[in-house]
Image (cartoon, rainbow, N blue to C red; front, side):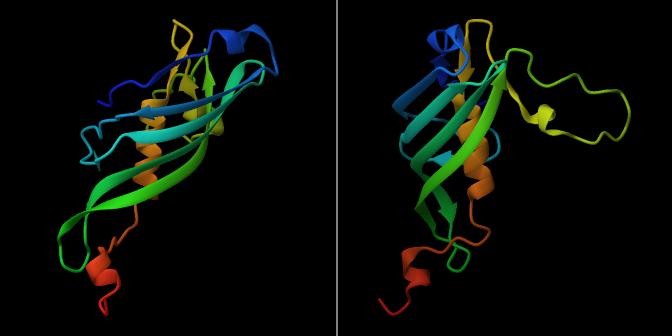
Length: 146
């Protein structure tokens, strides 16, 4: 489980259209999926009260430990990700008990906590995982002439 990175959005909820900007530097754990984040994540966050939902634009920079696809050595890969997420007090709707369900955008909304906080940690971790290269190369293998 990822350590929560909670942001209090109480002032943002007071008025539709209200915006907020935050800069954070936080240590985020990788979770059970094997992601190893080797330095604190520098995060810039733009938040907008869109009436019923909070739209969040994130830019995050950090390093993650990966294995070189050629020499199999571990190395720290610098990463910068940009993503948008949506948070709602209602969260995603409950899933029906059918075997197959077609997902919609509403199924990917994060939930606003009862204490008027949003957890950015899980969203950052998930987006780091999706942005990992399929075949990462260390400096030695990427530039063999140096």
